[in-house]
Length: 617
Image (cartoon, rainbow, N blue to C red; front, top):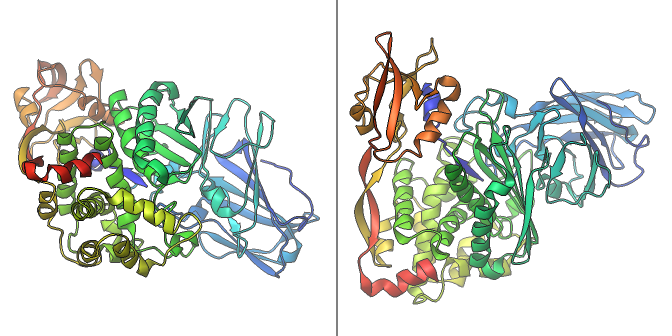
């Protein structure tokens, strides 16, 4: 999973499917999802069970799904749960909690029905620090227009029947097409049939229904599908495919033999940013797919940049945890999950690869790579640097560990970097962390999990004692990592650079706010203005009504933020402001708020062999 905090600090301030009529005819869970007859923004789901041998059976919809590391209670979005025998008589049902229902006289159970609400409608903010379902793991019901079918939000499982095959039939309007890595076994234009050998495979295969907008291409033997839903048609799959093909070709080249996936699907949902639309931006990985949610208001340059960031991260999850993982993941309990200790590897090494492959394949230069490393070090400092990473990982669903989850993208990636440098140094540049991942994938693999408490010893045996010492001291232990020490092994030391920051934010502190009564964008008077505001003589209390002849308010503030990210130094700019109740026009030029920031630079030529092997090996 990859979350993007998309300049949202500002927001803080600011029915009938026919199924088989007899129970127990086959050992298959037969599911019908009706996307045609949507009523009150709810979808009818009908489930025919496999043969039930007990007097009582529990049907559950997941509380948590792999890759999310959060408690989301998808069952609370389902209602009007009913159970029937073969003659259509109702059976007694008791709701046990948000996610589970107990059905009495279960041997007579012929079918269950329930209505599903979508999660996008309920989101209040960013998906950070609140109870929102992270949008890429959520669901959308927009009748006749778009359905984001993350299957865990629509389909559940019968207790002790997780290994039973599933047959899912989805009826949908002929105008909508379902993008997925699964194969539709029905030739009908209004009905799709998907089968999976067990529930876990179904959960890992999202489907997005919308007006057909997709491209396909092949990269080194892997078939790639890019599908896009853009509410206004601003973006198309074709418009972003060249950049995606370049990136995914580079990823495949970087991974080499470690990856054997034959098909991969990218589902991109672009949010309108309306109150009832998605607000949690980023992506969620699956073995053969990625679901991505971003705001449609982004300029293309920023959209492509974000796609590269999140899709590259999710794609590298093919390595871990999708290939290399512990028993907690292999035998995942959707309603009483036990978390693994090794988020440093699942998310951290994945995020490290998402950056390393870009310098390795020539997509970015050394300066940009070092800048990213420096930024991760700064971000990690804002989190608890003395908290054991393994303890945090194992308890990530609970406080105070839950609030530290974002460190998997910062310190987690830096952990991967340090291990990589140690291996490069000890092997005289011959091997690195990718070689370690190759060996672990050969040792374990998709169907052979490791024991959580044995991984460090296995890694040490495959590498060097120094790697084991690092893991025990800095990952399991509470000692902060001395990054300078490890970077110096590759001849890289601290440096300074001037860098343009965002126009309307300093860190996570906004320079503007929202007038709660008028919904107008106001310049704050309680914060020292940046060069941008000073150059235009903007004063605290000024209301920004329009920029370059486009009107702005609370309703489209995100448009202003995203468009400002494309402004260049000395660009002409015109603002309409309200000052002291009177409107006036201000004309001038853009002055970006440049700040001196820390970065790194290669300064020791004697270490060039290690550095070059690290970055280009």
